[in-house]
View (cartoon, rainbow, N blue to C red):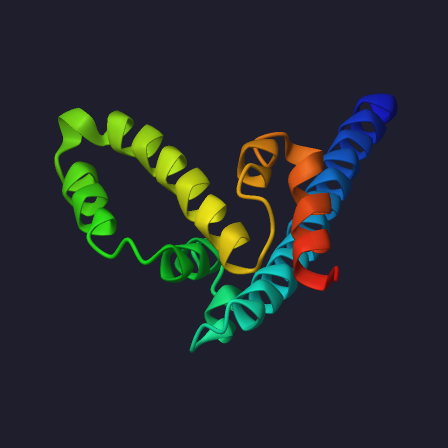
Amino acid sequence: MVFENLAAGGLVALILGALAFFFVFLVVMWVYMALTFSAMARKARLSSPGLAWIPFVGPAIIAFQASKMHWWPWLLLIGFVIPMISGLASLAFMVFFVIWQWKLFEAIKRPGWWALLCLITPVNFILWGIAAWGK
């Protein structure tokens, strides 16, 4: 009986520790993305680089502003409202985000094809850092 309580307590501690690590990791990634996208927005001479600090949508807003494709988000919004095509709208958003990143890289005088390399998760963090703070 005592060993069962110890095992359950150990399992709870392991789960809480993993959740704490995951939360800290997410916060660190959010801060890094916000710093890189706000630096890229300043390089692209956008009017509001502070928008990069909005969780989950800030980098998309910065890339959208740099791309100057102002009517595409309305199509995506319509797609998310209609439930039958929301899965396709999610896929479309991924495609548009790559296009927006491509145009953002070109706006700061970097090769646009870097946006395709950003589909590889570890590579995108490296490329964002190079694009934001490299010469």
